[in-house]
Length: 132
Image (cartoon, rainbow, N blue to C red):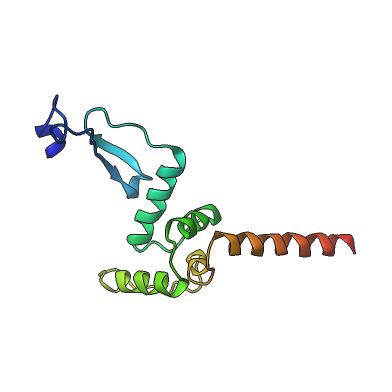
């Protein structure tokens, strides 16, 4: 592995580069890293973890993770859906329908602002019902 072969030396001569080996199934645990690999900021870690899970074909995301995906994949909902369905079609896993999962919002909302608007409308409706 390049991480172990280059011990004590920069990963790429003359450059400040580093890599980390993460395991998605272990909740993004770092298994190994090159020398002087910096700790990623919390949002960057959350964004990469959500994107890797999306590429892996995972369909169950918390609302905050869907919001991160909306910001991280700035494409039209139809293009996001096409990418996802094409990706999971290549897998040998059991093909599940995404329409009844939290991931469906990623394929219907344009961006994170549409999700915010949807949440605001739900709060306004809830408050109006309470007021009656």
